[in-house]
Figure 1 (tube, one colour):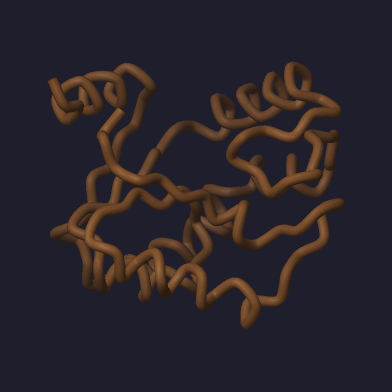
Figure 2 (cartoon, rainbow, N blue to C red; figure 1 turned 180 degrees about the vertical axis):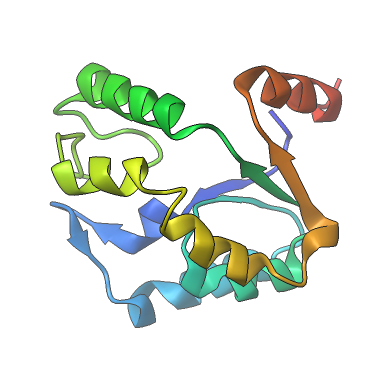
Length: 145
């Protein structure tokens, strides 16, 4: 929608069968991406935040409620079960994962704090979007015409 090349950290971080890749194996790919002139990167991995922030001109932080996120994850699991989503690494079919649901449910209490620490000092680049409607308005105002 923004007419930018898009990349998903999940495609870099995972290999077939939900095997997590070592960061030393995928980080060079991410480094090459951020050196390119234009990009959008989807993902919240705090360990790579500084690398991305150094080259980003804007960070869009989707700050939706835990309830909304849980509902969307459950809906996604149900609708995509057994298939690999386009934003995932090949051969990583959607599945029920209680650990991931817990991660989403506790996002605001735990993982979010790590992300906010990583974002410290880059507040001038941050845009918090708190609802799907707000996201739609922002995308409409930034999409090529």
